Picture 1 (cartoon, rainbow, N blue to C red):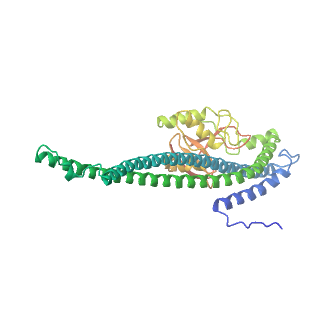
Picture 2: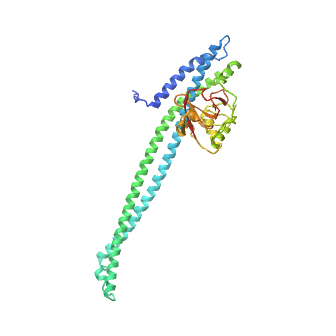
Picture 3: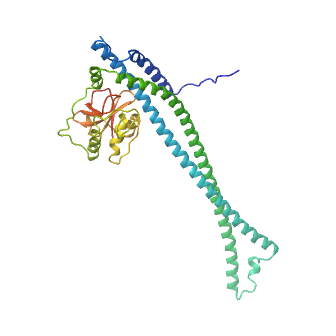
Length: 354
């Protein structure tokens, strides 16, 4: 008889993902049921309501996509940690083996000296003074032999300490490598589960794509303008060299299509546009919207400067770039090209500077 293993309590992240999946399923149901948004006889209110539902479904799909990307980055980092730890463990093992070999070789020489003394082939300090040309020469010989004995003991002790230290370093590095591998495997397990969920997400995003592509001209225009796009006005805008360079790069992609998980050069998701814009000036920033919000220097709404990254919605599931004069450039949703909107057109989460 098969037994089903009971599942332990879910972590906060797992509960959040489960809620997100249920919410996404609920949100997609009315959208997918309509067939398309160009419904004959449908009123403007009906179209706006369906667009709003599709908008929320798309945002939740994008949020799950950001989580998948974030976990992939974590797995890659843990793989690097594990490889580095294993490399350190290997190097420490080599040092430990070399130290032990040196200690054993030296002790072997000491044992030979001890054995020869036992057989009487090496004179003790007193006997060694015989044949000296004068009393001072005899004293020098005795002192020399005593020094050799003390030096041998000191070297042996030093080698023993080095061997013990190398062994400790090897043990520590081995434990670190094992811990890193365990963490990597745990993340891989979570990533495998999330990727299975993302297969379902892929189907849902394809549904969103079909819905957008089925829009008639009027409804498509409403979809593309749902965030209130405006013509960019950069008159009088000044900022840091780095910030203005990032703005220039992002603005060069106005009109580019949205793509889930894309970071250029021809299509972008929200965080991908930020990454690409900063890459053009040789600067690397985190890949996901949440990581971007966590990685920069926090700035307030009143401190915004061109090039700052602004996060939106609970959990920072969307980002855009402030370009000055109260404006933001961003990649928002499928079917909507990269565009400029008012910085306050979406629920504020926070802002950071790189």
